[in-house]
Image (cartoon, rainbow, N blue to C red; front, top):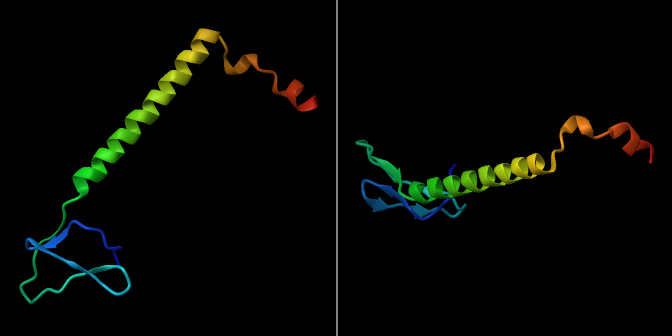
Amino acid sequence: DVPYQKGWTLNGVPVRQSVEGTVLVRVNKHGGLLIFSAWSKVRLGYLISSITFAGFLVLVFVDRRKKGKKRADVDFWRIKQS
């Protein structure tokens, strides 16, 4: 079961949504080619998210380097006792 989204086609013909909200594909004995054309948008979203996350990591790394803080400089035992 695949949730319905616009962009599904079978041999170039758009598929329909079933009552349950899934992709409804009717094929004959010859079968066909089922394609989801919105993959380019999905991939673009993954790319944008990845670049944003990598940028965030770079900012955190640069900020920590500027401040000269290292993980070993923090005394977690003293923080817990306060």
